[in-house]
Image (cartoon, rainbow, N blue to C red; front, top):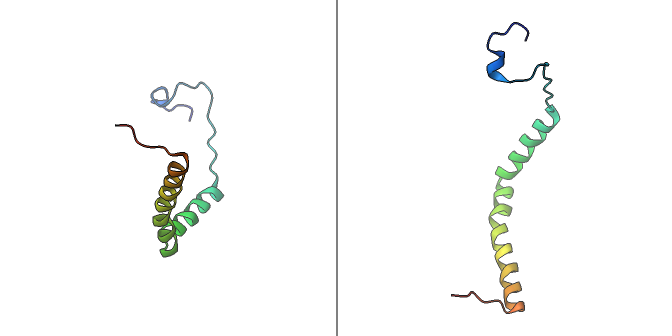
Length: 69
């Protein structure tokens, strides 16, 4: 905005900036959030940590890795 008295406090750029908004991305984010918060999404998210722990436990057992105290 030319003539904006506080412009220098907002940014130091000498030229005007262009901000582009991807509206499709916003829509996709909303859809994915709805999926995550659905009953099925919550079930899958709660199962994830157990799957990871099982996998890490199997790797430790196979490689005979023990905690050093």
